Image 1: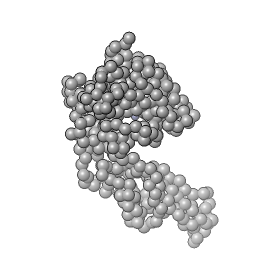
Image 2: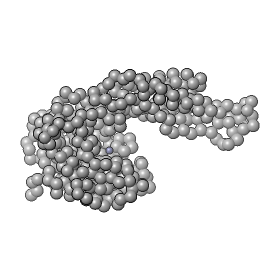
Image 3: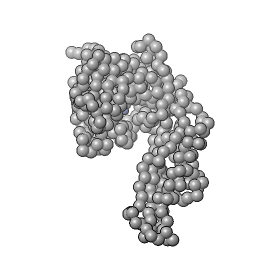
Image 4: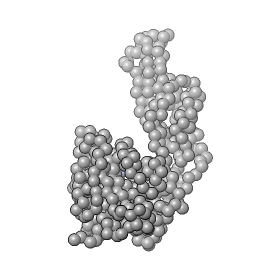
Length: 384
Ligand SMILES: [Zn+2]
C-alpha cells in the first residue's frame, strides 16, 4: 500500500507517465495529433488504482475530460482544474515524449504547460482520499484549453463547486486577475470591376486598409494610454491587433469584399457591446463603412484577494512553504475565467519551469511537489 503520495519519487513517476503519453490538441494539429484520450484513460486508471473515484466524461469524439471526486460530505466543494491537452511538438529540439530528468528539471512537451499541474492535482487528490473531509474535492482534468476550452465549458455545465484552483504554471504565484478577450470580424464591401476600370471599381481591401490604419492608431495612441480602473492586482493595459485578413478574387479584379479579424484583449469591467461600439467609432472616424460582428469572447478573471479561496491558498502556501506567495495579475487568459463566469470563484496557482509552447520545455519537480502539498492543505482548510 502506497502511503506518501506527496513524495518526490511518486510525483516524478506520475509526471513521467503523463509526459510519455502524447495529448496534442487535435484541433491545433490535426495531422500530428494523438488527441487527449490516451492521457485521459491513463490519468483515470492511475486515480482508480489509488482508490480515488474517477471517470471519463466525453466532450467530443475521442476527447474526454477526466473527473474525479474525493470525500462525500455536505461541506464545501473545492475543484482542482488542469488541462490535459498540449500544443504540438513543431520546432522542438528535445525529444518531446521522453521525459528526461536533469537535476530538478523534467523535460518534455507539456511538462510545464501543464502536465506538472495535472500531476500536482492528481497526487493531492490521492493524498486527500483518507482524510475525512467535511466537504469534497473534485478534479476537472479537461481537454482543449489550448484551443477553445470545450473541456472546461463542459465541466461547468455539468458540475457545481464552491471554488476552483486552476494549476496552470504560475511559478508559485497566486494569480487573481487576468484579461479577457473578444474576437471581432469586420467586413468591407467594394464594387467588383475589371482591373482596368478605375472609373467603376472600388476595392474593399483599400477601404479595409484605412480601417486597419485607424485601428493601429487607436491601439497605440488611445487604448494603451487609457487610464484604467485598476483591478487588484493590475493586469496591464487593454490592447487590440489586426490578426487575420482576407479579401479579393483575382489580380485583375477590383476586390468585392474584405474580411478582417481583430482580437481585442479586455480589462475587467469591459463588455462585448462596449468593444463593438468602440470599433464602430473607429471605422466611422476612418471614413469607411464595415459590418462588425463579435463572434467569440471570454471574460476576464477577477478573484477577490479577501475571499475564502484566496485566503485558503495563501495560508496553505505559508504553512507548507514558509512564505506568502506573490499575488499578481497577468495579461494572458486561462480556464479560471470559465469557472468565475459560472459563478465559481477561481484563481491560478501552479508550478514553475519554462518553455510553454517553445522548443525546450521543462518543469521543476520540486515546484510540482510543493504545488501538490499546497493544494492538499488548501482543501483541508476549504472543505472543513
Ligand atoms: Zn496551459
